[in-house]
Image (cartoon, rainbow, N blue to C red):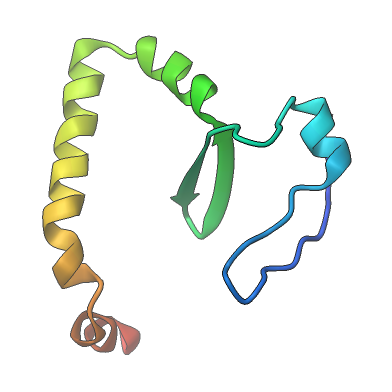
Length: 91
């Protein structure tokens, strides 16, 4: 089932997941969620679902993912800078 809801971000960056969706997905206090950003979209998934998906990956896919995470981590200080933003805004 697809739900369309509007949520508001608080001054602390928090959102509330509507009760009907929490109930349907069995999300309760303490449930661990993974937040993914992809193409300007935010995706929330239970950590157990992410772990389940990762267990289905081949060794090659896991290694590639690991290298991507290492590269992103090491380059993020350069990517997340005002100078980098300024360089790209006129392209």
